Image 1: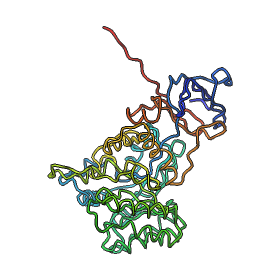
Image 2: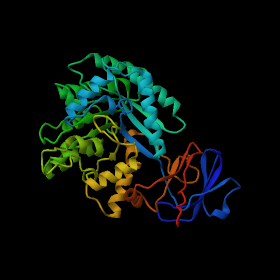
Image 3: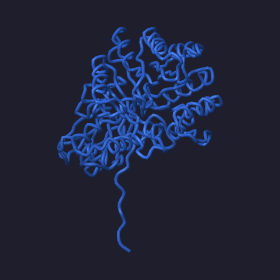
Image 4: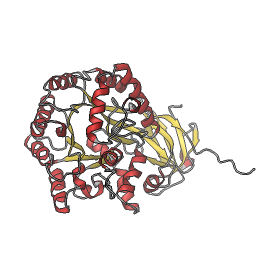
Length: 410
């Protein structure tokens, strides 16, 4: 595909349409009147919406696409952890690399341009999966910025060897460190150990936390307190936090306010959280997800993300963040244009802030990293799970897929 080109007939999120965007030298050269564009190859966009590429703030490339190795019976979090722990003993670097590449291609084709992936390092996985993700980060750098979080899925205090492996991964190129207090026999100590590593290596921290529907025993106040005590505001993210769905309104607001004050962000994972928290024996099955929009109104930066793809945690998925946004909007019973536009921000601006990777604003002079969607507005894109028309990364047209013609008649 050409390095310099023009996309004609684009629409902007503010409603302006019938514009053209020119890309040259890796940057957006102009947006505006089609007749005022430079002489470059032209492609008809057919009214497609120009927006920043999506940002995936929470995914597990290392354990994706293993559903065939893990027969699901209970559909519970404990089963998913147990099955995956057994499966990862047999993970090889090449195996993880191949499965991770499959998901990265899915994500790129679905418009994702930035991603944070967790990778489990412990005595079972060793550093094999981490080595695979480092290769993927380098090999896919032209299409997606991959951030690697060295992650302790199965606890620390009962398995201190994992601490040394996390440190080795951080010294070897991991971008940040992650923990999972609910799998540790001492959740508070677990939080402290992860923060210790974060401070030692000067990196952000990201916790899987409060992943159940019991309103008691939340670790979030401890995470907020340590964030402030250690001066790590704006560098801490929490995933899941489904206890929010069980909190009474006053407690929900109080803890959300604590998170906002401490600069702790939240990533809601609709597919996994609703699958694992849904009780099949309960005639009134809970949705089992944190109310992202309500928490965001308290000042918390909230993103939506994929988490897992076709494994015991989530036995389906295609790394399509727009589909995830639509799923969340459906589960949270959102309908207004304003609400759906906010949800769209939870896969664009909000996750980019959380993982602290620049998301170029599509404007003249900016780095040419953007996508085109087959929709007239962000809210329409969420409603209709809009198709990707184009992916532009690094100033190159990486994917061009205009709406196919519909053949009518006999």
